[in-house]
Structures are given as structure tokens and as C-alpha cells.
Image (cartoon, rainbow, N blue to C red; front, side):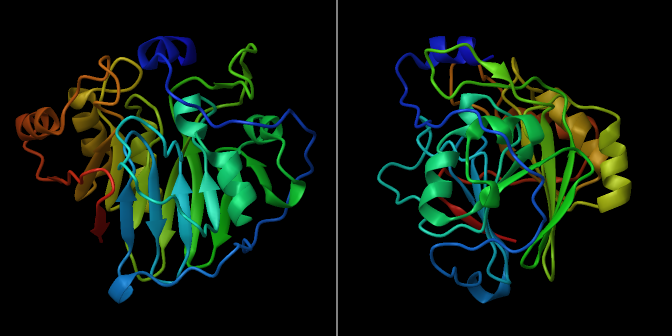
Length: 277
């Protein structure tokens, strides 16, 4: 996927660094950030979309979590300041358009980085900031409980874009159970799979962040089936429109949901906009 996307992007900047390093198994716990983040406005959970699959989540208890932080993607808000304080960075898989600026953000903020064991090893971060795990893992970040779940995709990573990519473990999705807030599900890059029914039963997510672009992930029709399996009340589409190949649209998703007589609300934020949940 990385090679195909690089051909499409043709010159998009990538902020990567580091070499592969061995890693011990870190104990879960609170993450020390460079600055203490404030609680979300009026006790709400705030979700800011940075374009593509990149989000920054702020919880009522003050946890600030970045997911797949490619914050320099073509759809990212122009001139927006990147986060100065983060508690955690979640990586769904190793492709450049999802790892993004994770290492630089971790170095700046002191945030722990969560992801598959193999990918975290390849990033070469300090052991204290490295949380390599796999589907089934559960961790606590302030008032947010993180659950690592499966995804159907591929995963490879290259610290140097001129070097061959290395296997980066199994792809992941994340469920974020927020105390006194919603339960969010970020699917990562995936197609629909029957395990989404188990995610619905076990975690009861209320909001799903789902890829809809097609080609490398599910498109609108498949995403509508995912909404049906997950039984969520709202869906925020992602991973569309960044490149010409990603042709799925929120309007198409809305149409596919209507075909299924599904009443889930499609929430379509502009890049850089914050949605209170």
C-alpha cells in the first residue's frame, strides 16, 4: 500500500526518524506529558479531525489522545498548530499515512505510543514511552480505557522512505471507553468483518470512526454494513478524499445506510473542526 500511496502523493512530506530497537514489555499506566492538558470544554468529549485517519481526542478528565497522527496530510487544516501536550498516541498500523509524525510528537510531548509489538519496536522510542501490544490488550490513560481490537488490513513500516519496509505486526483498531462520556471505536484501515459484532456486544460503542474511501479500505457500502454490525448511533467517516483513489464520500455512506434502513447519524466535520460528544 505504501508504495502505491507514495506514487499518488508524489512528493508529500513525511516526518519519520529512528531505527529499529529492542523493547521490554512496559507496564500500563498514566503517561507523563510535557504540559498538563486541560479538561474538555463543559465536561464533553471533544473529537478533532485532522483529515485522513488522524484524530485528537480530549476527554472530560483531561486525557489528550492522538490517533494515527499524520498531521501533515493533504487534508490537514492549513496553519493549525500541532498538539503541544499529549498523553497517548495510538497507531493502528505501520503505513506512513498513519504513523505520520508519531515519533516527533512523542519526543515533544513525552506521550506513550501504543501499537502492535512489532511496529513499536521499529519506531525506536525510549522503552518508557513504548507500549507494544496486540488485539486484546487493555490500558488506562486517565479517564479513558483503551482496548486494542482486530482490523483486516496489512502493515509495514520503513523509518527511511528509501529503505525497504519491514513487517510491522497485525493491524489494529481501538475502542476508547471514556468515563462520563461516549465509547468511541476507531477502526483503523479495514474492511468489514464479523468480529465487529463482537466489538458491539463487548464494548457497546456509540460512535464509530470508519474509513469509507475504498480501494485500500472499505467503501461506503461496506462501511454501512460495518455500522449495522457495530450498532452505533453515530459514524464519523474518515480516510476518504485524501488521494484520488479514495473516492468514497459521506453522501454515498448516507445513501447506503438508507438502503439498509439504518438510522445512524453521519457526522461530517471539516478538517480542524472539533465535535463535542
